[in-house]
Length: 443
Image 1 (tube, one colour):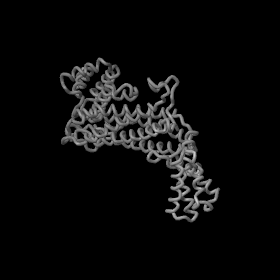
Image 2 (cartoon, rainbow, N blue to C red):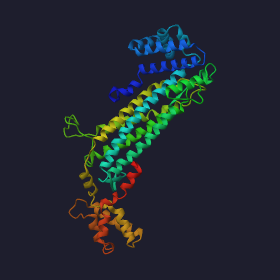
Image 3 (cartoon, one colour):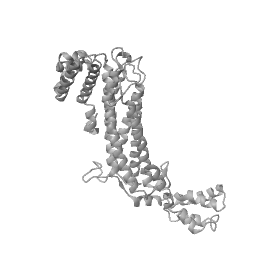
């Protein structure tokens, strides 16, 4: 977790303090469940809860250091924590972790942390969706040029372009909700998941109090297909971020200049060229998206563990879980801010629509000629001939507009009324369905 790309609320989830608090909560809840079943004294469960809560409330870096000291000897993180807890609780600590195995604590804790992270990410996405919705409605009737293969295609609404990104992130939000639900499971089943030394009722109790569901079949660990699905969802969200960031980067190019990132007073774009205004935020987001997607493959490879468990997944998750969620949290927040402040140039958009002399209206003219009785093949040939004549002589003294070339064509002259041609060459006709599109997207 590089501080430059981290936000405190998300990084706190992965701090030792939060992790050990969750570990204690799992152990304390298990003791309470055991006490309710009459398997340990109720007074012992009460003392464990009281003294443990006091220890966690006063938890400091000195406690982290003490646990690290114990782990340096035991070479086992959960045992190190339990030893530290015993020092705080006293004799009743002998009832802690009864019938449990380390993975019960580790995997249930990871489920809590990932659900906590998912909740923040869902909030992030709500903020982004609100920004995209606002800007889409603001530019619902702003005419811009649509591009395919990077080449001018036909006019469209800039708001429609943003609405498309909104719809994608709305789908991604639903994917994250599903991923959160899938990862929110608890396993308190003991060695190889047989409940030989602990009742499934204890697992249910712990799960209910942590806002989780009991894992149907744990193999001593929670099956890693759940985690793989979670990181696949993060990877898809990252791709959505990059798609929008790439669009902004293209629109900000000097020869396009239809939109650009907000340039702050005092901001510098280049150490050598004072005129530069670079799309640094969207370029940064492109890189962060690549990083987040890189965590998908190891998450998928974690699914295939040996028999009922091994720990080949552990080192992977210690890295990708904090880094993936922290990086995505930062990226979503950065993207929201970028879109809220995005500077849009409608006049430049309209100028670009007409910059090719009107050839971007060739599709409608093709239909007009077909309606006038010309075969589609002949109509295509006529329109392409006029478009190429316009395209190849743009900016030259002998250059003519697409309309001029059409009207000079003997196969067109007298076949199409002026009003019909006016309508065919009107950019506004491409916004006629924008209300229906917006109704589908925003309701």
